[in-house]
Image 1 (cartoon, one colour):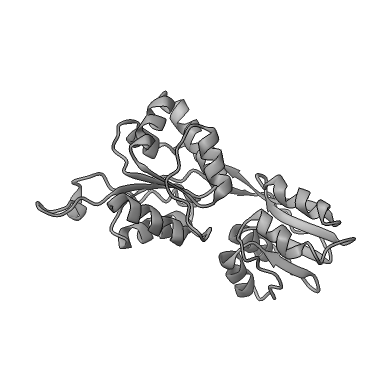
Image 2 (image 1 turned 180 degrees about the vertical axis):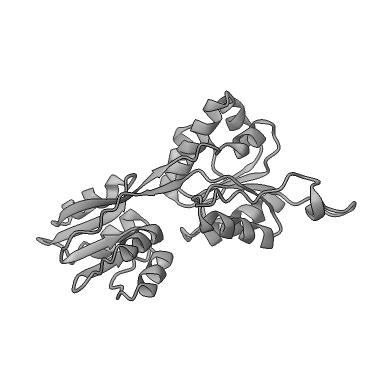
Amino acid sequence: MSDGDTSDTPGDGDDAPEVGDAPRPRVAVFRPADERIDDAAALLESLGAEPVADPMLAVEPTGAVPREAPFVVLTSKTGVELAAEAGWDPGDATLAVIGPATADAAREAGWTVDVVPDEYTSAGLVAALADRVAGERVEVARSDHGSDVLLDGLREAGAEPTETVLYRLTRPSEAGESAELAAAGELDAAAFTSSLTVEHFLDAAAERGVRDAVIGGLDSAIVGAIGAPTAETAADRGIDVDVVPDDAEFDALATAVVDAATE
């Protein structure tokens, strides 16, 4: 699995701005260490930013597959891909997914998607399923860092949720370039895509002895969070969040962060 580091240092090669050109905002992005970090860096480039691709997540499959149940919930594209690669199929189950990227992956696997919430969050999934799951067993298949909001909400709706961990999310050992840049005041913006990316970013900063400097550096930068839970995690750890897009999708986050950084 590629580490996905596609960033350049200022002034290197053909990407250096010419004299008189407006400098491109340097934006850190923390997507998983696979094609998603490459796609994220390419998107930021297309928006006129200089990406700092610093993966804060690596996927470690457990080999498990979702258990049979009348309702199955998958919360990520990664979970769908791992289940499909293992030969799992939802069969007659009602399949609920958290958002359009996950839904697209499920349809590419040949599955029928029955439920996609209007709000792409755990709370949104609960709201979409609440009137349908009383007395039913609901299998939730996801990472080892899934929110309690989903399981607790399903229980409150009268369901009997079970959980299968399809993969673990770890921090790549080389992560942390963005923390060093933030500590030096050389980062214009950061785009956090989950609470775990916030935590791993600060852990990487602490390992380098620059945690306090990082938080100070981010005070002078634009900080974006993909949704309210991620923004709350950042705020709880002393990071002020400037941008939360209406849609909890990376494209919307990247656009909002670059727009704010170039104003």
